[in-house]
Length: 131
View 1 (cartoon, helix red, strand yellow):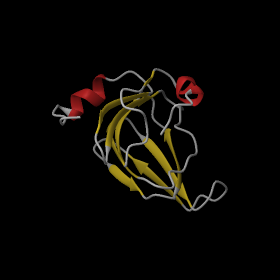
View 2 (cartoon, one colour):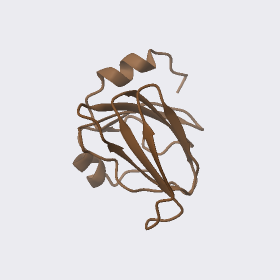
View 3 (tube, rainbow, N blue to C red):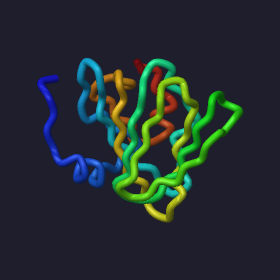
């Protein structure tokens, strides 16, 4: 990648896919996401990467915990709010609003293959080509 320049707000708001990789560098990756009301990313952990999330539109509930059975923290995120999920923290992002949740994520290091597009969560769950 030779770099990326763009209007991240517009790219995020215009996205209608569950997940689209916008840019991938050697040490980080930019991904835009759109979740329907009630939809969630699903409980997950990234043992070797940090994740930054920023909500552009909608309302999210983020859960964090030390393992897949313990939620230590629940955070409400609205428009223009962000959070950082450290490596090794179990987490989930749930659209708790009435409209689409539009967010972008920065993974460091990258999480998905460059160019990945998952139109739906089912597509994402079925993809075996993650890094």
